Amino acid sequence: RTVYVNGDYLPETEAKVSIFDRGFLMADAVYEVTSVIGGKIIDFAGHSVRLQRSMSELEMVSPVTMDELLAIHRELITKNDLDEGGIYLQITRGAPGDRDFAWPDPEEVPCGIVLFTFNKPLVDSKVMDEGIKVISIADERWGRRDIKTTQLLYPSFAKMQAKKKGCADAWLVEDGLVTEGTANNAYIVKDGTIITRQLGNDILHGITRAAILRFAVEAQMKVEERPFTIEEAQQADEAFVTSATGFAQPVIEIDGATIGTGVPGDISKRLREIYTEEMI
Ligand code: PDD
Image 1 (cartoon, rainbow, N blue to C red):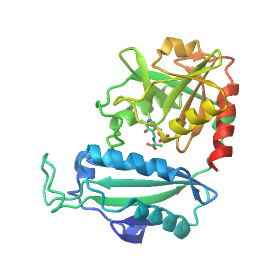
Image 2: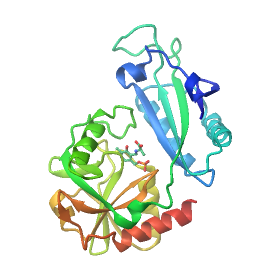
Image 3: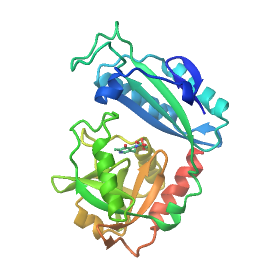
């Protein structure tokens, strides 16, 4: 693979970052994952707006303009002959000469940037036919989950707890209410109404979420943005999750309780269809 590091396109084995990089030492970094289908980037505009917001909330100065960033995405797709999969992008607060909790002056230490591509089938997914099982677990992440940082230890921990129980993912619960999945937004469907937590600092503002809700409204489906409990989810007709690389994925079991009839629901399936039709 050819990857991008601070201005250079290099073979992945030659790409290097400093051991003092704050992304490495302190998870002082923000990221985006954008999907690519048929060599085309899906919703770059949405991802670049969120990236700029993540950086500005953390007072990071972008090392590239968004036009440059789009050009880098395109160049990597070409260089790697990428048809279906995605692009990972990370901007870190850079590498001061030493470890310090205080942020360095951005004039002296510019932010670092890396991008790499990955191949992955997204459209034809077995998960869509079968759906996934999830567990619930306490949400013990920090309070600014609207900023897409690389602080991903708790989500990885939660995912491992799910795997140990034979499930694909975990839904995080705070004050008795579901926030989101480890790397996706969470939804239930009851009597035809799509229910998903409202935006705030406690969840990531999913780019796929925004598109799915827009398409749902356009298709005259009812949408309610409010939190829900695990019990309510277990009694729902359908459940699903959304993310850039998963689109809409049905959830068929939560903490051992079957959702609906135990197969992917019609609304989840319809939303995935609309999403792929509209976005690809
Ligand atoms: N995760 N919530 C969390 C905590 C996430 O990490 C993600 C994305 C989402 C969905 O956001 P979007 O629709 O913009 O992808 C929600 C990415 C895919 C990841 O970490 O790999």
